[in-house]
Image (cartoon, rainbow, N blue to C red; front, side):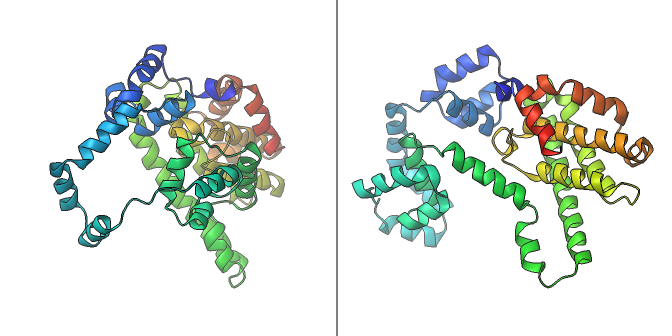
Length: 319
């Protein structure tokens, strides 16, 4: 219920059109027709249990089998890939393989399972979707907890260098990672805000503040005036911003998924303002809105943006 409230951007007419046409229409063409991103259409289709019809999939297969289509595909493919494609026959899934997939998919890393079955990652995902297999809640929770324990933006580089580099270099490395993330966030938001979905989104103005808000978190975390207690909470908010699979995953729904990131940031910044100093926050803010008013607005609307349950969970994370 909370997630639906946070991403309530599809009209009833759009959903009806999606349900009516998805099963027999090219997904990319339908996304263009609806003025939505391909990822958004796929997410809604999966959410409502929509699937392509057998006749539509058969028509795709026949089209791909036509000589003209084959010739066009061969021109685009590299010579090495082309030779392998001609020689390699389609390897059907055995009953034993399917049983193993059904038994282990829900609680096993997909890439590891693909390696175990000696199949491509795409093939395993296709069969899992075909048979309606999903990851268990406990498995997804364990992934989330591991991300929180080891922030994804620092996992590889910091683990490799932590034993041999001094603390100062690690801090510099973290700053560089945050700068790179901020550049990426700016590009992502600019593209989305100029898209048809972004221009018509009800929370467009708030989401546009995400880059400046993340920048403020980073600036405060490096300010000597800010207390260590506040810096600990700032670090949690920064780490949460980096997570693609959080309570409202932007990996699935794009920029609207930053609503929960804005809320946990607002709660953290309010704590700094109350516990340390409001002036240090105002002086560090580079956005075009009044920071005090913005923080108050986000917190006041939090229940409407993400729902009371997610709002409570976010508050608990920095408590």
